[in-house]
Amino acid sequence: MGLRRYTIQATIYPGDEGGYVAECMNLPVVTQGKDLDETVRNLREAVELHLTGEDLEQLGLVSNPPLLITFELEPICA
Image (tube, rainbow, N blue to C red; front, side, top):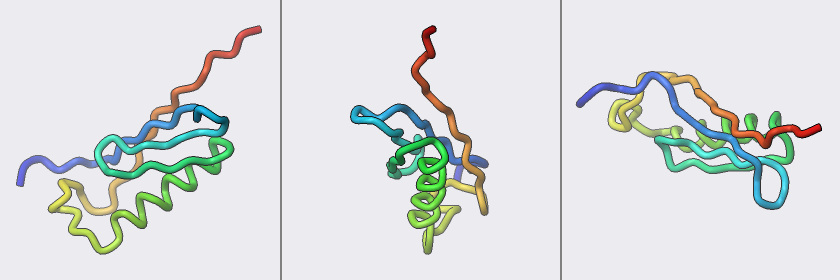
């Protein structure tokens, strides 16, 4: 097996109809929430559920990898 990733990367961006969408870059996980806190909680839960029972080494991940989240937010104009 090649190099294993030490983090799971995800991006959170504003949803088309309000709220936020979280999408993992290297796992097939997408979730949403009405605010950033809820979106992050939902993302953690979705990733945990996705990885339950999986062989992390086979997925190219180290044991217990943290989430690295990038936020894409609309600029605030005065």
